[in-house]
Image 1 (cartoon, helix red, strand yellow):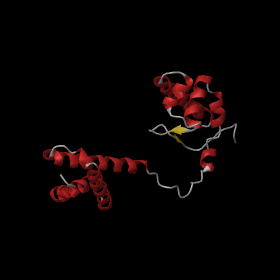
Image 2 (cartoon, rainbow, N blue to C red):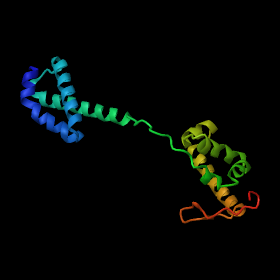
Image 3 (cartoon, rainbow, N blue to C red):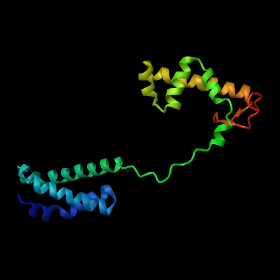
Image 4 (cartoon, rainbow, N blue to C red):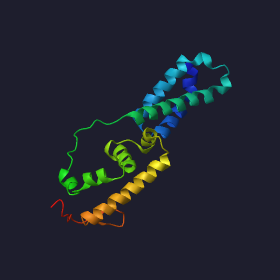
Length: 173
């Protein structure tokens, strides 16, 4: 079988198959071209002509998958790094002190996850504990911190558990 014969038999159906999957004309054209290039280069592998359609469409499916893999790896360039709003963070006056006052097992976990930015499963490996244990320590740490903020700074909590109100801290004022 020749590439030209495959082209005549399948080009329209193949192009619309690809277009339907990727929903982008430019991408469909690229995938279509790559598919026929692979068909041409690997035509010697096709042993039975009656299996040509399945073989051609499988190559197209693989090219579509490759397209989506490449697309998912693309990260748009960062135009500007947003400035951190320090005023908002300064409102939580005793935060550092509260973190330092946590029992060491909770302090370690909070520092790894929230300060050093580790994922919870990474923190579990570092601390040599289970993921469930890391989650429990974080939950307990949050409860302790909420209690401290409520007592010291007179913050209140909304229905979602977020801090609301203005600080009224005798130690920081």
